[in-house]
Amino acid sequence: MHVGGLWRYPVKSLKGERLDEANLTSDGIAGDRIVHVRGLHGPLTGRTRHELLTLAGSTGEDGVPRVNGHAWDTEEAAGTIRRATREPSELVPFEGAARFDILNLLVATDSAIEKFGYDIGRLRPNILISGTAGQDERDWVGRAIRIGDAVVGLYARRMRCVVTTIDPDTGAQDLDVFRRIRSEFEGKLALDSWVISPGIVRAGDPVELIDRDVEPEIVGGWVVGAPYRTGSHDAGSETRT
Image (cartoon, rainbow, N blue to C red; front, side, top):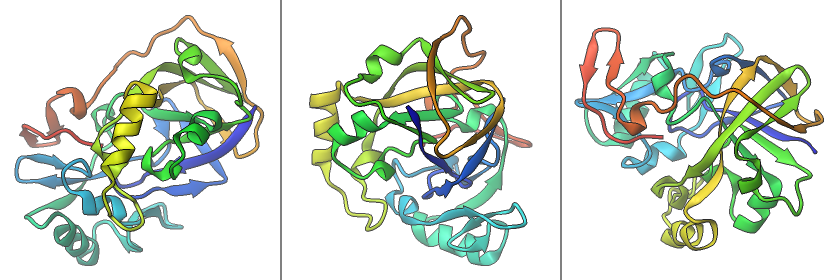
């Protein structure tokens, strides 16, 4: 098996960027989801503001997250976000663990993606493992993968939501996608994961499935009810991705 793809999402709920290599830190891929959209009552995400999913999130050469090519802290980026959410909203930097829905990585396998039959972008993974033909993600739960010096723990299969029904290129919704995930995958697809041992990983790196005897220290962020706190802000929040 090998790393078939790497993705980072600098701005939460926006489309991600494909990487040739990624720095796996104790807090996931460096630069992942370090800016999010805040509304009047907490985070706004693609679960309810589908148009966010069609916007391009990227990282500039200066390391600054961008929205459709504009640095996140510019009026151009802010205006793009307000038009997408259609309500008062702003972009906010935050690097706490609660920004991740469950854990700080999402791992997908090519065999499951092939069976799924839709664009992998609907699932928003960080790492794709290729060469898994004939293997089931359910058999990977409770184990880990080693990629060079990095070790990634595989915690649980991800319960999917309405975000999977939105085409990230057109914004069109297809509810049959969600129905298929529920009927053929028990509503779960890809693996909630976390970084056990940091390291640099690259596309094409060999992957080894191994046993593990550790558990993540924190499971679940805003999506499962963690208080929404970013500095001086403390409010209730919607569910989010």
